[in-house]
Length: 280
Image (cartoon, rainbow, N blue to C red; front, side, top):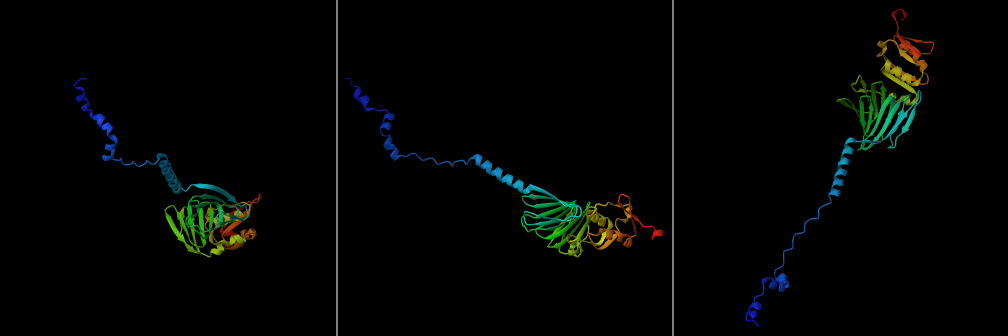
């Protein structure tokens, strides 16, 4: 045997020594446990959540409509319209409205004629009525809106309403009325509100109402055309209560209370002209 062999066996490589004592070294000098990284939240879930909240906010701000309905009444006819929220709209003769349901509001556009609104309360869903440039906002109340082309008259029977035209606004209480003429908001006046909604019972009540408005009301109850040949007659005031079923009596009375003449064409068209002094 080579004399150097025992000496070579005495020197064992360090790696072999560590390998033989690996388990013991692990017990005496354990490796540090790495901190657990938080599991990342699914980006897909976050994106969906953010998108949903954003969409809900946009929809609430835009207040889109999800249902629209149209209603109308014929000449000389009244129509009662019960709405899904418990509100009730009574249409005067020859009147038209558009009802639209929105996420945060209930809206009605009076396109022509006159309507009486009995609104069911809904604190977080106001009832908005528009007639031309006039906007009426309520929560729950009873009010009448009449429209004559672009002119509007709002009368409150119960509760309160906010009336706005462009940048001008006013709050009306029970027994108050306001007129909008040529896009301008007038001043509130005290009126007998019950008289102004008497049309439901077949009575037409006027209180210093311009003749032009009176003629438009009459025209909603009869097909016989009425023509005002002299525009200077338009603002003449008319007062009184009349039976909507006997408008011929009312028309015959006009020349007795106003400086005008009433004549009929062969086709039945009625013409109003100013009465001259010699015929007075």
